[in-house]
Amino acid sequence: MNILIVSATSFEIAPLLQHLEKEGEKLSFFDYKLNGNVIYPLVTGVGALNTAFGLSRYKDIEKTDVAINVGLAGAYYPSLSLGDVVEVTVDRFADIGVEERDGSFTDAFDLKLIDENQYPYESGWIKSNKPKFETELKKVTGLTVNKVHGTEESIEKITKKYASDVESMEGAGFLFATRMMDVHAHQFRAISNYVEPRNKENWQIERAIDNLNEHLIHLLNDQNLFA
Image (tube, rainbow, N blue to C red):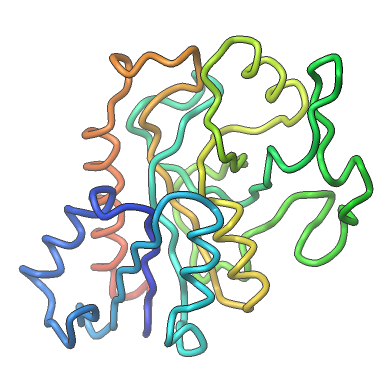
């Protein structure tokens, strides 16, 4: 099976890359073979635009059996703990639109610039395309932003407009691209921080990355999952 691992940055999948170098067979500068599967780590750069473009330019996208987007995320609510690994099954672009005079936000769907049910959207949301397997991870909804929220005012506005669990800068771009190209897709994210007034002292990035990669390596070592 051909497995595409998509990450915005190399440090988010550094433990996976080390594992592939140690335990896998290097087929080329980019490709590895592990447990009979060909694995291609694709680092796209930060943001939904880079992610979607990177996927569209990937030379073997038509041969890809499953694409897996991995990375960090912020949680909106304490029901998710720092370090938790979750599967984002539904995501949406949360900042495409206009700011009104009163400071409220009207998105492109509200403005009727985009039909909220035009493919690949369903009421403005994008679902994972044909998930390839089941995991025991908690299923959550995501928001994708170009500017992460860091003030009480902006957080209150976004949570009031969209009921969602986590926030990232790439998720909806990944789901959009995989839906448009009809690629089986999963999105896994580890909670590195809460979406709150910005305070990096509260973040647990290393723990989140370790947990994310531990889950991913376990997944790739499960020969029954990718049979």
